[in-house]
Image (cartoon, rainbow, N blue to C red; front, side, top):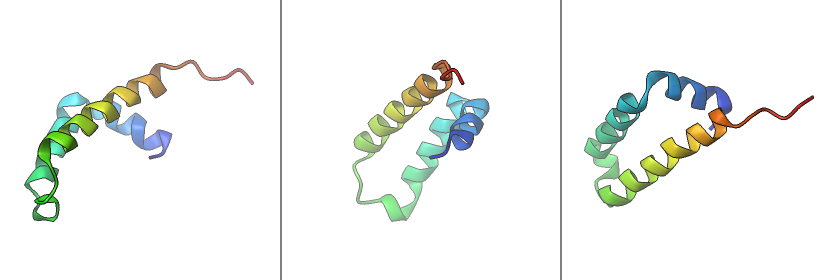
Length: 60
Protein backbone atom coordinates (compact mmCIF):
# COMPACT_ATOMS: atom_id res chain seq x y z
CA UNK A 1 0.00 0.00 0.00
CA UNK A 2 1.13 3.52 -0.66
CA UNK A 3 1.75 6.05 2.10
CA UNK A 4 -1.19 8.04 0.74
CA UNK A 5 -3.45 5.05 1.25
CA UNK A 6 -2.13 4.58 4.80
CA UNK A 7 -2.72 8.25 5.53
CA UNK A 8 -6.29 8.09 4.25
CA UNK A 9 -7.12 4.99 6.28
CA UNK A 10 -5.68 6.51 9.45
CA UNK A 11 -7.78 9.64 8.88
CA UNK A 12 -10.88 7.46 8.55
CA UNK A 13 -10.01 5.82 11.85
CA UNK A 14 -9.74 2.49 13.54
CA UNK A 15 -13.51 1.94 13.64
CA UNK A 16 -13.69 2.33 9.87
CA UNK A 17 -10.74 -0.02 9.41
CA UNK A 18 -12.38 -2.74 11.48
CA UNK A 19 -15.74 -2.19 9.74
CA UNK A 20 -13.98 -2.74 6.42
CA UNK A 21 -12.41 -5.95 7.74
CA UNK A 22 -15.76 -7.17 9.06
CA UNK A 23 -17.42 -6.44 5.72
CA UNK A 24 -14.61 -8.26 3.93
CA UNK A 25 -15.23 -11.33 6.10
CA UNK A 26 -18.87 -11.31 4.97
CA UNK A 27 -17.82 -11.50 1.31
CA UNK A 28 -18.20 -14.98 -0.16
CA UNK A 29 -14.84 -14.62 -1.92
CA UNK A 30 -13.20 -14.95 1.49
CA UNK A 31 -15.41 -17.70 2.94
CA UNK A 32 -12.59 -20.27 2.94
CA UNK A 33 -10.20 -18.07 4.91
CA UNK A 34 -9.82 -18.27 8.65
CA UNK A 35 -11.51 -15.20 10.22
CA UNK A 36 -9.13 -15.25 13.21
CA UNK A 37 -6.16 -15.02 10.84
CA UNK A 38 -7.71 -12.13 8.93
CA UNK A 39 -8.54 -10.26 12.13
CA UNK A 40 -5.04 -10.82 13.52
CA UNK A 41 -3.54 -9.56 10.25
CA UNK A 42 -5.83 -6.52 10.30
CA UNK A 43 -4.64 -5.64 13.82
CA UNK A 44 -1.03 -6.04 12.69
CA UNK A 45 -1.73 -3.85 9.65
CA UNK A 46 -3.43 -1.16 11.73
CA UNK A 47 -0.52 -1.11 14.17
CA UNK A 48 1.96 -0.81 11.31
CA UNK A 49 0.06 2.26 10.06
CA UNK A 50 0.89 4.05 13.26
CA UNK A 51 4.54 3.05 13.10
CA UNK A 52 4.75 4.51 9.58
CA UNK A 53 2.71 7.62 10.35
CA UNK A 54 4.34 8.34 13.72
CA UNK A 55 7.91 7.73 12.52
CA UNK A 56 9.90 10.88 11.94
CA UNK A 57 10.65 11.55 8.30
CA UNK A 58 14.27 11.27 7.29
CA UNK A 59 16.01 14.62 7.06
CA UNK A 60 16.73 15.91 3.60
